[in-house]
Image 1 (cartoon, rainbow, N blue to C red):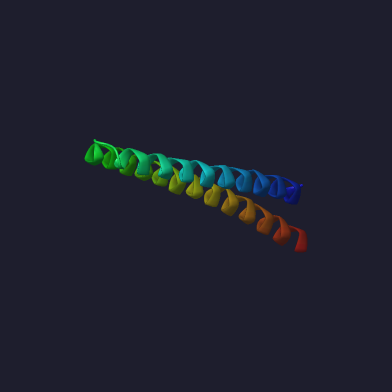
Image 2: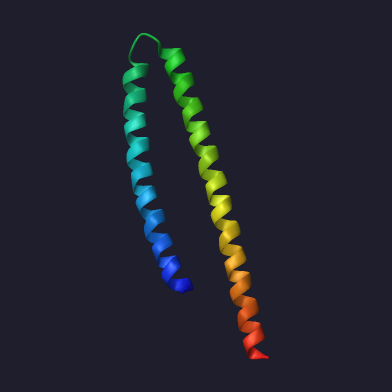
Length: 85
C-alpha cells in the first residue's frame, strides 16, 4: 500500500513540476515583454517579487514533503524492527 501511494504521489509531483515549468516559462516570457515596455523598473521589481514568493512556496512545499516522507520511513523502519523481534 505504501508503494502504491508513493507511486501515485510521484506521478502527481511530476505533473505539478511539468506544469510549474510551463508556468515559469510563460512568466519569464511575460516579464521580458513587460521589461521591454516603458515601465522597466517597476516590471522587473514585480517579477522578482513573484519569483521570490514562488521560490519560498516551493521550498516550504519541499520541506513538507520531506517531513512526511521521513515520518513514513521511520514508521516503516519501526514496523520492520518490530516484525524482526
